[in-house]
Length: 167
Image (cartoon, rainbow, N blue to C red; front, side):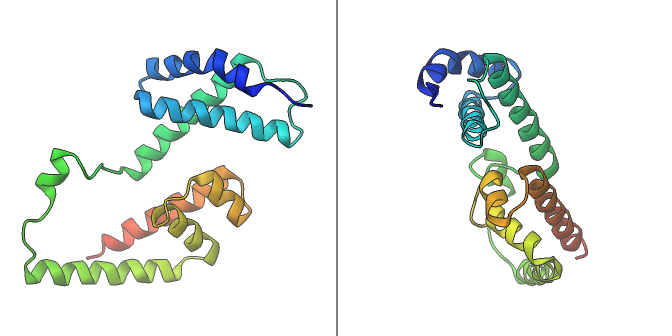
């Protein structure tokens, strides 16, 4: 069965985006979450999990849940954009010998933490952090669900933060 997702997107995407903005998401992230909601619905339809075209409420719910998941991840990881004035002020102006030695020690501890991880966890972490892959793609690659994939990546982050804190 072929559904007209183009028409569905055309009629409901702006409403879903507005709902996400009302929930405090910036417009760019809201647009990404809206597209992800439609992609998930398409994937479920192709997998045979949806017999009928999804109701708009279903799409809204998917988008809102994605927004909640995004906030949870941000709270756990605590990433900072590098192009902000705060990041520029925090950046070191000149490297002295002590900082270089400390950075090398920290890097060695991080390498040890990575080496101690199970192979699947290490691969998921590196694909996420170094390669920049989205969780869904990593989940497909390593054969786990997206939520389980995020759990092992989150645990990897925690191990590295704990390890780096030993300096």
